[in-house]
Image (cartoon, rainbow, N blue to C red; front, side, top):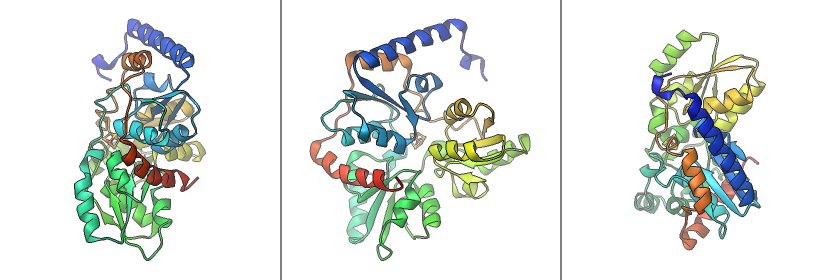
Length: 316
Ligand code: SF4
């Protein structure tokens, strides 16, 4: 750990004070705080629910709260806004984008669709509302294979935007897919050399990686799982030590839920710069101001909702 990353006692008190204020205000304002697994530990600790995209989307869909505060990246808050139209969804950090979501655009997708008019378009949830609106069904890393398997055998399938997830899910589902060439730079930064070095350091550890990692990394893993799947796998698996190949924020959740086991990152370089933009100060400010509210154009939201609702139903 670098000197700059260490918390000083004064910092801990300040963070604890911010956390108290956030929880107090969330109760007063009937706000539900949803937090993605890749967020900073101190943000995870103020959550009503910590989870992956699918778990958080399902929680948003069922939410009775007056407003949702979404700590993640923009497409996630947008998905929640699609699911609860008419109720404010607040994203404390408006600059939290996603490199992968930015790799597919509506114009490009429409051009591809025009050449394959009968193909079913499956879009990973890491897409904008506008791309979801042009898709038949969305998926997450937790149900991508099930979504592919749910599509009639005689249909061609376009999968956007993550090429690694597309190929992994296609293999599991026994389907062929037309792959959009997008990728997550954070997950592709996890290399085979990193895996070899980590295994040399912890030879007894099992390797668990996310399907956004490259196929060559996924092929040498003991398990390829979504972040929720990682929690389930490590809880029931008999090993005591794991090498985790995903964004490093996941280690906090794993260690917190399974304190009797040990978790190590395959590489400390797998840090999503967008996920780390949200801070407790920004969450508190957002709750006080009830802003910034994420908005989706109603016509786009209504079309995107069909694809998102189908995603939520598959693998329930
Ligand atoms: Fe997007 Fe990758 Fe960051 Fe996830 S880790 S939010 S896919 S850039």
